[in-house]
Image 1 (cartoon, rainbow, N blue to C red):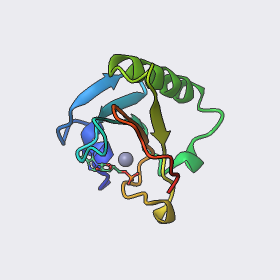
Image 2 (cartoon, protein in one colour):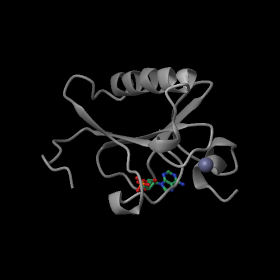
Image 3 (cartoon, rainbow, N blue to C red):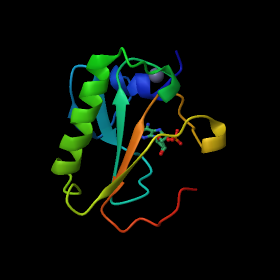
Length: 113
Ligand code: AMP
Ligand code: ZN
C-alpha cells in the first residue's frame, strides 16, 4: 500500500520519533507549522477519524495517553497546545492515514480555518 505513514511505521521511511507504544507512533511533522509539531498516529492503517471505532479501546486509550505524555515531554502541557485531525480534502487532509497534529510552542491564532 502506498501510504507514507505506513511506510514510516514499518521503518521504510525515516522519521524523528517522539513517542511509541504498542498501537501508536508519534513523530515530528516534516514541515513544522509551530516550534512543537508532532503527528500522533495509530499504527493500524485507517483513513480518518471516521474509521476509528468506539470498540478500538486499546488504540483509543493509547492515543489519549500519547497526547498527554507528548504534551508533557515537549513542554507545552502547561502553556497550552492545539490538537487537530483533518478529515477529507475539504478540511485539508493530505495524508489519508489517521493522524492528530499536536501544535504548540508559540501563541496560536484564534482561528478554526
Ligand atoms: P494533513 O494535511 O492533516 O493530512 O497532514 C499531513 C501532515 O503530514 C502534513 O503536515 C505534512 O507536513 C506531514 N508529512 C507528510 N509527509 C511526512 C513525512 N514523511 N514525515 C513527517 N511528516 C510528514
Ligand atoms: Zn497508512
